[in-house]
Length: 410
Image 1: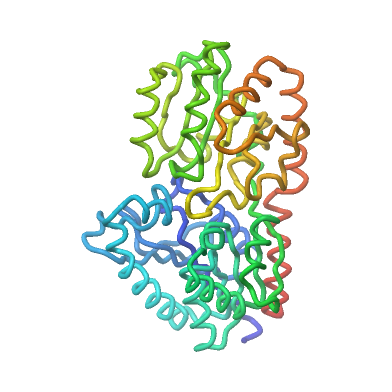
Image 2: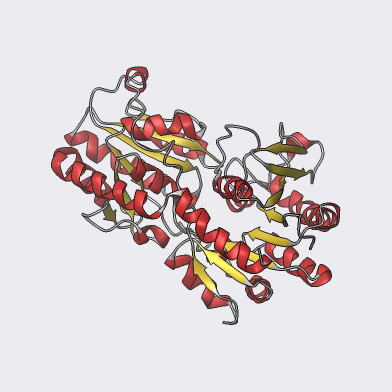
């Protein structure tokens, strides 16, 4: 490596903003741009999407997006719900999957040569982690893995478990976002690769509870308690159980409104459930929105509710960035006791925990916080301080920066 040349790092991800102010989760982008600001040349490869550029430079990153199906507007594997939910719900996504895998593999090899890559930082163990392990052997470059949950919780197939084990064995280091994800990775690894917990961070400049936009309440005619839920409309988010809890809540607190912000394959079925329960005036779907706009909704809400579950494939919340964003916004949080959520939600300290798939328990805890404003303020304050102390992007970036420099000798 030339002394005057900064290392070129290839970042692989299947969840990445398609354009500026996209509503897609941006945690890989947020980490990558901060590592780029520390002097690394970060090259990102992400799936193509309708309306997204095949190549662009943004915030110090070179971003390549590969096309895997024509016409481009029909690409369905990733985005707008996530790969696993899309593959479950869309026959077209399943047809496209072999093409997706082929073109992702080819583009990884092409970019390694074109950009003279010194290290691969791969987010998610499958499928791109497996491809990275192959190219690590071909080009003799180090591999750094980051697991986010869905890539390990849903590895129930013996063949996929072997692929996961091989991939982890080829990595110098694997970081995970929570204790739950760490245990899942350890269960399929051979024990030789270090597994370190380094979660994704929260942008405290955006999510800080200061954007009290009262026009939101005027827009939706909100005069009573405001509940907020945010996330992809996928099974593991458990939104149907929150909707089923609403009639119980409205029976005691009829002015309550629930906003469910998001998108995904279950949107129609969730809206149909609301109509069938005759609560359309109380449950509102504002649609998807970028983080800056979303922060205003966190700030103005009384309670954030995350009714996540373990879905049929075994997938669940590895961490749940949206919970951290709510906490950072000084909003009281109610969350299911699944996955990595218990790493930061301590019952009656930083939030309230509920049983998964239990509308009655959800309703009781929500009504508890509606009536007990003192408790609501206390857990919101403690939750905000916990996130500020442990999940700032500055703190998280420094941890990744340490391992980047250790691996690359910089």
